[in-house]
Image 1 (tube, rainbow, N blue to C red):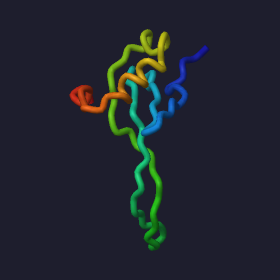
Image 2 (spheres, rainbow, N blue to C red):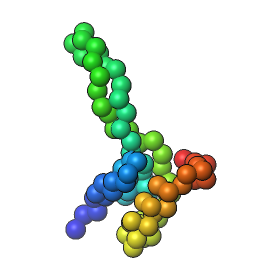
Image 3 (tube, rainbow, N blue to C red):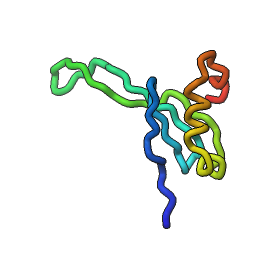
Image 4 (tube, one colour):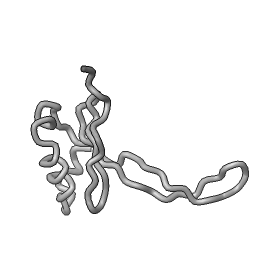
Amino acid sequence: METPFYSKLYPTDRRDYRYNYTTQKLQRIEKRIRQKQINGVTSWAVETEVTAEFDVRHQLWDKMPEYWVLLYDNDQQGNFEWMK
């Protein structure tokens, strides 16, 4: 069986998370609303982007994915921002 590049999405109240098996990082994914110009017409578009990444070895991720998602999602003070 081949290892997938990304895990399934783990949604929380504020944002989504997924694990990137290639880089061994937990990625925080947020939706952003941006103005885009498509064929000369300006409109609003919702885009998703990775806003932070956290180092988590895949052996630890595979054992308890929900733990890591909750750990980084509950970080109200930005204690883990230095790990970007």
